[in-house]
Length: 198
Image (tube, rainbow, N blue to C red; front, side, top):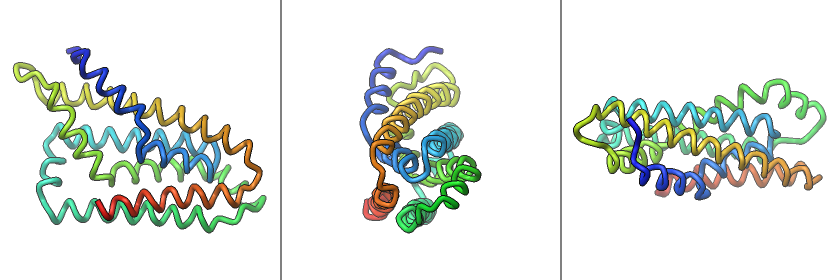
């Protein structure tokens, strides 16, 4: 089953538009380095795939339609973003902390990516709103949803990784590590705050 050309055009257009995902992985790159940025991109990719599978199984619709479940997922996700934003802001860029990030950063960044994306209720709403427009009713719906959702995730992840390399290049030109950490922390804090108020 090949999705229509209109789906690929729309999915690619949406993937390249800067959004919270790109801002998150760029901020992670600035605060923890390129490897952590790539790890966080892979983490958000897995988080996105979990949303795809949940939506295909009808679980996302149940969460979106339940005010309690929606609120819990929304505020837990926002709180986690704010927490890692504050942590990045307060990071003291010493040699020891840099070595610690290099040693433990990949797994931690990957887990952060999974958590941030999986707890982002807007991702679930996006898949539920976007993909059904291209579903062909005479073919298995869940199968089509997974195929198109996977394509969306792969496109988004590709753009995220590109953003990581661009952020790393920017970081290499800026010697003030403390300042860059604070900027990345502010970005993640702002993303969390935006989730709360929307």
